[in-house]
Length: 105
Image (cartoon, rainbow, N blue to C red; front, side):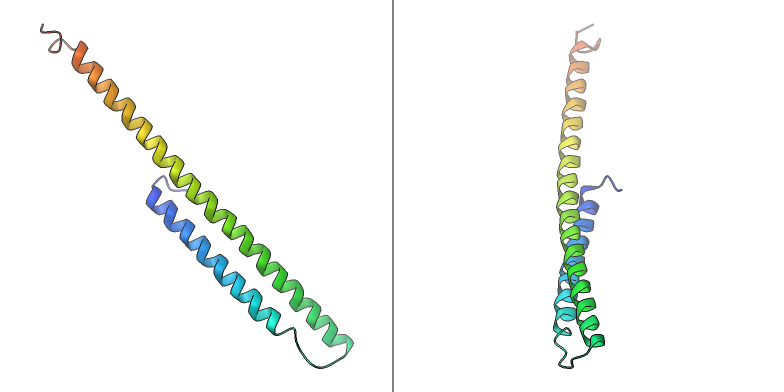
């Protein structure tokens, strides 16, 4: 996993795009379930298509959740970067004050 928020956001966009494609596949598969013939084989075919469409929708939901988690992770990385930057700035300021040059020595 990258620690670069921009890369993490790019991965979140990829996951969201895959979710969109999975939903489109579910619609396409569902559309094929409307076969007109009647037989045991046709019933099994329709059931398998229904199952696949459900699987595509479930994976799309998983990918949406992944995208949200990645975006949250990117925000946390940025928050931590800001916190570390603040600590570093604080240490630099303290060092200026307590250094021999800062004390006028």
